[in-house]
Structures are given as structure tokens and as C-alpha cells.
Image 1: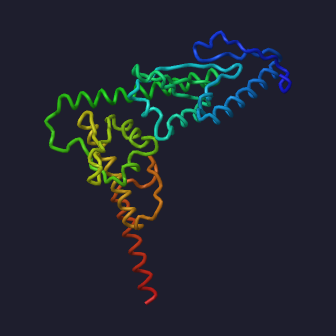
Image 2: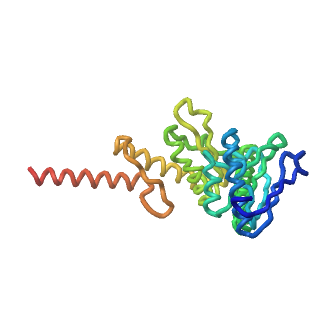
Image 3: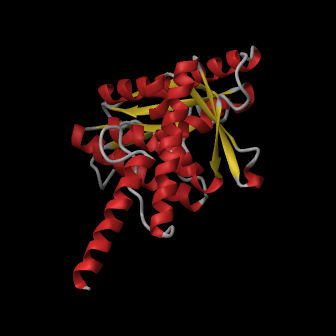
Length: 271
């Protein structure tokens, strides 16, 4: 109170639910200052006790909050590698997101979203769209695996050397998502064969979508493998783009031939 000028009282009528409420009164500046002081101190003590990160979605005065349910099987997918997909949604919208998994045994978790009204609505739309997308992907996969079509063996799969699996998937699965959106196919990664040095990209959907998606995966795999052969594995390879930069083995091969011809010409000139 002395630091902020706000009047502070503690309402413990909700303590049986595991929390109490801090009630603040005063000018808008005083309430804002008191909120920041309390949040900072709460974060400090929770970090000390090893439970940091639980105050990320505390709403500041004037902020909105929203919740959306996430089927438990999709929580890891939604979060992305080391939380990368959640961080991306936060940076794109300005909202803060916390996944509360205290209900996981009931088969779902809760995405708690805090920020301005516009940021919360936008972020919630992103979360729900991503869950819907992966649910639709699983539906396509289930339909095609339940009633296999008369297709040649290996028609819907691409073998990927294990060292390139992360590259093909992209950060947070971004590259796979891009291929899915461009072709209409559904793609899953089967890593049950990783002990043999490769995994399988399983591609599902109409034949034309499967063929298009496999071609994109094979082109990218050929590109990165050719680059590694040229550089001896030590060169940093720029990530693939949808509209720019070479993305197939033919262009890389032409580049290699041009380099060799130039070297031969220089040698002949110096001789």
C-alpha cells in the first residue's frame, strides 16, 4: 500500500477452492502499480518454491480472459516442441496462454488465455483452429487406414533418413503443416523404424493429394541430401521457402555442374 498508494484487502471466501482474492481500491495508477507489485512478488516466491509459470495468465485490470478445452491427446501437438507453437501464438496475438492440465485424467486440458479483448479472441481462434485441423487430419488417417485402398505397396509412404526427420518436419511441425495445406493430404510421422536409421512419412488422402505431398517431401529430402554431399555435411542450409529458392535435386545438380565447369575453365586459363 505504501509503495502504490492503493488500498489492499484479502478476500479468503474462496480458499476452499485453493485460492484467495486480492481486492484493490484507489486510482487507476495506484491499482495498476499494486497489481504489478503483487504479481512480481508472487512470481518470485513461486520460483523459489519450484512452481514458476503459474501466474502467466493472471489478468491485469482491463484485461479479458477466455478458456477453451483441449482434448488431452492433442495437448502436446498444440504446445509444439518445447512450447514453440504456444509462443508463436502469443507473439502473433499479444495474448498470454497457459495450459492447465489439472483435468487431464478427465481426458482434456484447459487453455487459459489472457490479454486485451482483441488479442484473446484472436488467440482463442488460433488455438481452436489448430485443434480442429489436427482432428480433421486424424479423421482422414483413420478413414484411409480402416478401409485400405488397392494401392501398390509403399504408395502412401516416404522413407526419411533419421538425421533429416527434424528438417522435414520443420520447427513445431511447420514444414509438414505447410505441405498439408498446399496439397490437402494428411501426414503423420511413423518413427517405429528409427532404430534402423529411418522413419516413414505416412501420407493419406485422395491419390492426387498423396502424390503431390510425396513429391514435395522427396524434393526437399533430395535437396538437403545433395547439399550435404556437396558441403561434406558442414554447411548451414537455408530453410525451404514456398516461393523462393531452389527446392529440387535438378536445380542443385545444375548448380554443381556450373561450379565444376567454372573451375575447369580457370585451370585451363592458368595453364
